[in-house]
Amino acid sequence: MKRVLVLVLAAVGVGGCMERRIHVTSQPPGATVWLNDVEVGRTPLTTGFRYYGTYDVRVRKDGYEPVWTGKTAWTPLWEVPPVDLVATALPLRIQNQVDWHFDLVPTPVEEAGPLLERGREMKARVDR
Image (cartoon, rainbow, N blue to C red; front, side, top):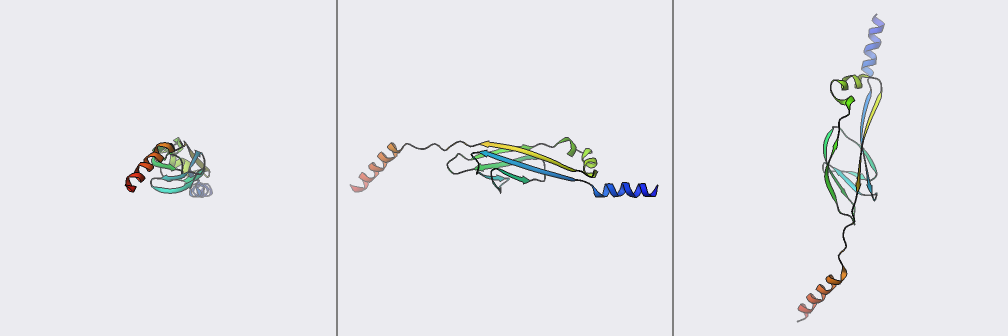
């Protein structure tokens, strides 16, 4: 009986591992990503996170309109109390990956004609 109790306590003491990751992709790739004002890298990227909830997400790449939005990492069933106590006690590695994708829109390019005409007008005023 003592051995069984020791084995049960040892198994509970070993416990498992909860791994939480956010995977961010973009089209085109190579955009810089910030989560809650912390730069985490360039897409595609995978980073760990500590809590479930809403994140302030910024995605930016030169030549494209920046994206600034809120995204939510939803809590899976195995991390809701009291199920989370059992899940962390199991000698298993439990992973949860949240996937977010962003399609970036190219920044509109101004037509050169009106801009050149305005420059000529300004030069003519300076020359007078």
